[in-house]
Image (cartoon, rainbow, N blue to C red; front, side, top):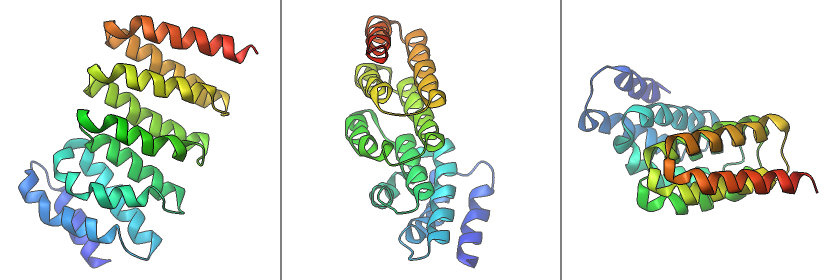
Length: 184
């Protein structure tokens, strides 16, 4: 655990470059494959925090993070997904969503909202992918989930419509179809 604390201490320093973060990220990457769930959780949680400010520094861990999507601990899996969504690039948005889709049916609404927030951030980061993201969000509205989650999906769709003018017609269509679907 000392090695984790050392890596976390390095990461907590301000104004570090990706190159300066690399040794700490490498340690966290190794811990992602630990047999101990607490170490995997600590590592992916810290990588998720790093990815918020330095996504490029974490991309080297993406293969290990993809393995954690199947982790029996849903907290670890959720953090892995959200970290991957933060480090993803425009060319792999569709592939990431394919990983997310089956995962969403396995987690609670609380975790779904966390993943949804990362998906919404992707729409802001890559506005050209609005069609793919709106289609994905449309599917989430059709899934069985609670009111709070579905409301969060609608809010995300509305936000995308407001932020990306080209998304207006598709976004409105998705919302209309969802309203009609829910009345059946």
